[in-house]
Figure 1 (cartoon, rainbow, N blue to C red):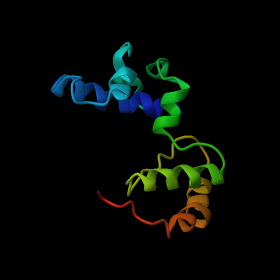
Figure 2 (cartoon, rainbow, N blue to C red):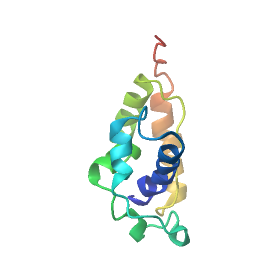
Figure 3 (cartoon, rainbow, N blue to C red):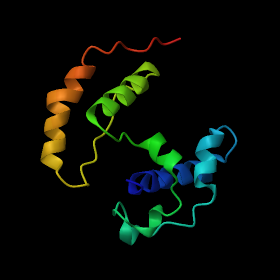
Figure 4 (cartoon, rainbow, N blue to C red):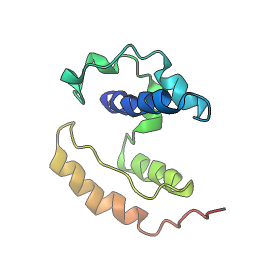
Amino acid sequence: MRWFPALVSNHVVDLVKRYGEKGLPADLTAYVRNRPGYDYQHHAESGSSNAAFVDDESVDRFCVTGEVEEHIEKLRQLAAIGVRQFNIYLMSGDEERILEIYGERIIPALARVPAASSA
């Protein structure tokens, strides 16, 4: 799963180049500070050396992993802070079954999650 935070790092690097580190969250800019580079020939490739710099904390930050209950809990936490949509990247095998689980168990469990208040 490290390929996804590695892929996201390209967007973070673009933000830093465009706006500088000031004004961006320190945790976000620190995440890419020691990134050695990115080889687009291996873009989004599981096991790519592009992901060697990605640590466990970054996987936890950018990915929803684990059992069904862990997906539901993390998505509820994200909803509580205002997240209203997410993407499912189906690139790790058993794609049809993962979609079935989301349709049968995860999305229904989140259907009545209250929207975060906008303060």
